[in-house]
Image 1 (cartoon, helix red, strand yellow):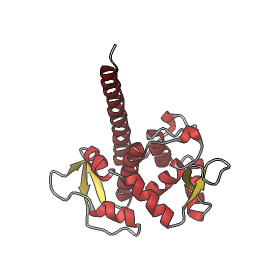
Image 2: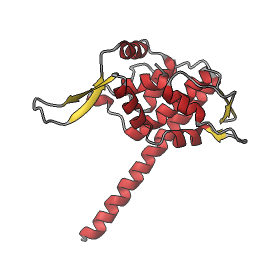
Image 3: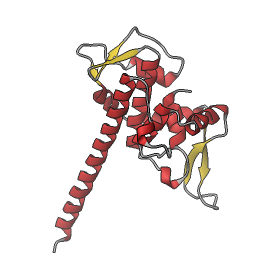
Length: 201
């Protein structure tokens, strides 16, 4: 399992306080992919730009797609631009992949058989490894989860990511999620103002 898949599984926790927006999650998943590519030596981060290394094909299909999507033209892509480009609809892609692998199961809410349907992690070795990583407060996973509003119960100042490039990626993920929330709030204000115009005094 990759960091992105572990993050997706943690985000699928059915508890209401862990409800995560799909756009936020997509940005964080793109960041998780970039961190795994850093760990594999497939990229480096130089002055907030994603510098690709030698072409590689990771074993994981989605991570392989991420590696193939890297811009190989100078001056190379900013980390922020990578998150927005790669992150588009990425949470849906991970849901499809994990459902196909049996890591997620469909379940209906409530007692009625026709209640609303949602997905949650299945009890598999990969899911248990993700949960173990989470319960051990693994710094990268908890930092990315924090970016999308999932609280690990660990003070922020205890997070030591141990790598400058990883720290940069996590910081940019936080900024991108905040930017997305600002866009949402602005749209809400604009829609409310528009509705008031039509409603009249």
